[in-house]
Length: 388
Image (cartoon, one colour):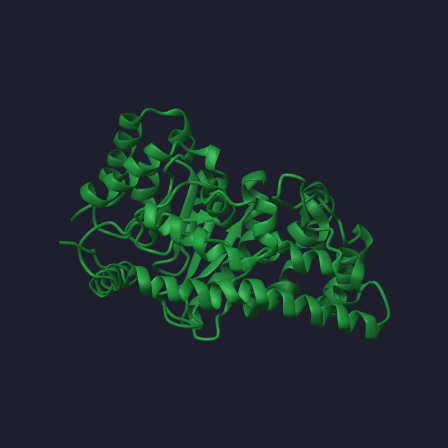
């Protein structure tokens, strides 16, 4: 006879509390997240219509939760919906014809504007950047205020409704892990913010070589803003601030050390000092920077996309919580046995001593990006084989 949702949730609370405290849990926690777009497709809904009608999503979320084993509720990134981006006239997030929001390359800050940004980054963002990124804000103050109010209401009706009402209710119903209330945040580290939202990848790559002093000063100027955004209302070691990291794999090591790392570490240290924990998604290959990651606050969550699991475990496994590294592509191209063997290999390498939970190297975005039978086999392997 299976456990009731209350018993399951109690078990999962204990597993994750042990993980986050640096203790060995009874088994490897399974974090099998999929995106909202995957859930829509998997439920057979129209991806364009469903993103404009959040009320349709609860049934899609239920179908995913019914069909895939996970210790957390398996929907990730319910944060971007077209309604408020369209109201704002967004140029940085644009709905594609395939129903997926795209993040096109933009450069909203000009190369000769670093001095103005450094002098007062928040004023510069509000007065110069936002009207350039969001065309509906490039108007008079009264109209701008009305647009912002409407967009904020739409954000609350989508993101707030799903993450604040629907998902917490489903977490309880399905007996999933629940973190303390208002203990989650999302931010960027300073240089990634400047690269992603202000300068764009091409221009920031030129700035690293042509304007290293100004870029460093800009990172320092915006650091407190990124830190403030990254501290939840109620920080807790039993949840985290999610931070995707982008630029270092495309930088020379000396530039990473001089420009990127100081304010990166200051941000992570600040979140820990406030009582929180950071979850870093280390995009691309961070093998060159493993030693620098060791010095981050203990039990920082490090999700790796690429890298040698043995080397990562050796250098970081005693201090930090490791996840990722399971190749999503294998679920599409490999046999079921190959997928199971890879799961066991990673458990054997990363699980000893604790401080490891399962997640893929990338997010599952589309139904056709994985073989569903292989996905079931991997989750079942972690559930049965990943026992301490």
